[in-house]
Image (cartoon, rainbow over all chains, first blue to last red):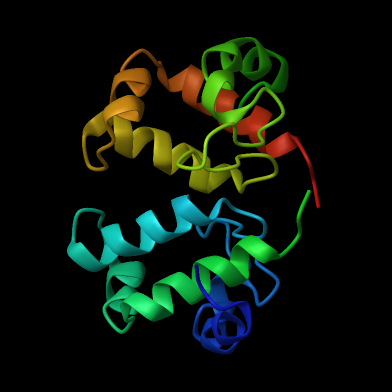
Length: 82
Length: 82
């Protein structure tokens, strides 16, 4: 499982659209706070592989390592537990 | 914009995985409660068109009309405002 603190550090590059708190800043960007970890890992990996396409996310996801994906998923999952 | 009550009625077919309250019942299914409406509409339309692929969601989305998509997005957006 990912490291929440490392995920928070990496999430600075996600925050303009998804918020550092996981609450969307743009209507087209989903909220991520409390999202299931498995779904977040799959979404990022699908953007990395090209299985899922989105101009912004394809670009952003290309910069991520496997560890970054795990850490970001752990971080956003940890927020806003409902 | 969609109709929340009609969306709630339609959401019975989503509930086994996403919860009638929008909180995921399965690790691979995302939470939907409070999600941005525009994102939900895009996600469903991308599954309908085949732009986005997922075995379960491709099958489910095929049964939806444009009005169903709008109503479901309005319903899940209305839940769990944070």
